[in-house]
Image: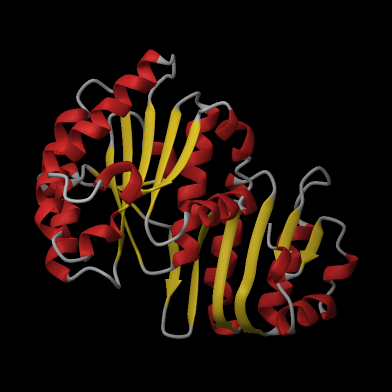
Length: 292
């Protein structure tokens, strides 16, 4: 694929006919994006397959449930399947062509069952193991033939800590779209990005008045896009009064029918309380171990 075929995609723009690549370093962001992708597929009446490698299927299902994906009923009726990539795709020493044929069979089965399409997400960490790289190139290249009839949507997940630069470059060119969290600030001590499930903003590290403007930008975008805002501070170790006040003020500007949920504990929770969080009706603070 040429560079002009690539685009940074919001999840809403990844639909049937799209072969997308998600490269990540932050496990929480990966799970947020996947949960949103799965939830969208279920709502659209699509068959959804999640092939997992780094997490056992039960653990991935629990992560989805924590991110507002109500998958139990969908699993019971056969719309959602979460399985290990080893059991679902690899089958020992199966060839790349056989792997692609297995995906094609799933697409045909979803059509016969009356679904509007098949939505698949696959953890590609298997390809970082011995002999995996040999099958990866053929699999990703041959997969391109499955998207022409608009029945399949795929997100392939690549952990940047498991793959070398050459493999990541190949992954970028083998897909027609890329998926990534919207990042407002990414530095050694602070990361502010869009959170997709539940929708809102994630802030990790340490933040003070010097980054207040970018925090306000992120909050303003969430206020515009999301009916109810979530501000995830569970990975934030320090916040000053100016930034805590910016969060409280963003909540106070919401109409009475909307709310902001801030997930935090320790110092951030104390500072939010000191600057008026407890007295703001639209603001709810939840501890980090009860995130969603």
